[in-house]
Length: 228
Length: 101
Image 1 (cartoon, rainbow over the protein chains, first blue to last red):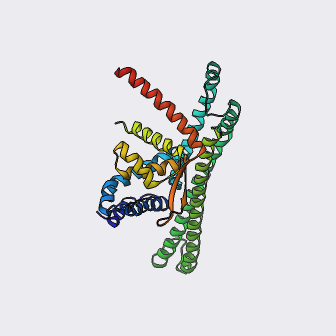
Image 2: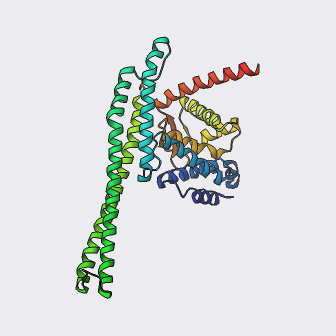
Image 3: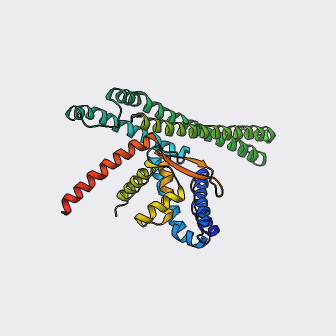
């Protein structure tokens, strides 16, 4: 296997991950080949010692999944949004438990060094998360969910309007006269496109918020540790 | 070997090496894969994860021979994490030693 085949195989097996991640990984291996060649190694030899690109792709996906579970920056899509909200809630509840149980422990072992910040800042952060943060996240989730469902309902209404006015042109339907056709199609199309726009907008909003939660989780993780 | 354990050991090795000095990918891979007999390719996904966790940071540096290389360095949170990993590791080894002696 030469460099081209190796990278092709790797790229093929990484189709499912985010573009930036894929490109970064590919660049890493390209650099590896470049440096290896400078050291007078053969392409095939380098490829062989790197291992099977299929296995590497599997590893990459696994590692990226891991960093997602601690609020990493893997997929920030709306689909992921619910699991993120839940993860946020779970984190906060375990923090709460930790903060309150630590209080006694720290008294027992005052000498033991921890990397964690003091009790009070962690308590404040946890209380904020517990009483405000989590609920904001849930509220946002519900809002965006509702927006999405209503925008789909609007799309359906528009489509139904077009369908009914077309049917009314050919068949006798009560309350729908054949003259209704142009107006019905025009109104139906506008309503449909409005619904589509609205669903795109709420989807984007969901993605944005999903990203915000990711960032916030990361901030939380950092904030719980001392910097020095 | 337990994958979780292996993963922890790899993180420990990578972070320990980078605590002393920054390395570029190829160099780091050679250093680790020779000792631990793993295929060279397995390390890059790990580096990517450690970077995502913000324990590592990367930067490009020109090299005398050819294009710029990506260097890896440990971050402050990385150092904190490494300290904990080292403690856990020593604790673990101690327990295993007690059992096998």
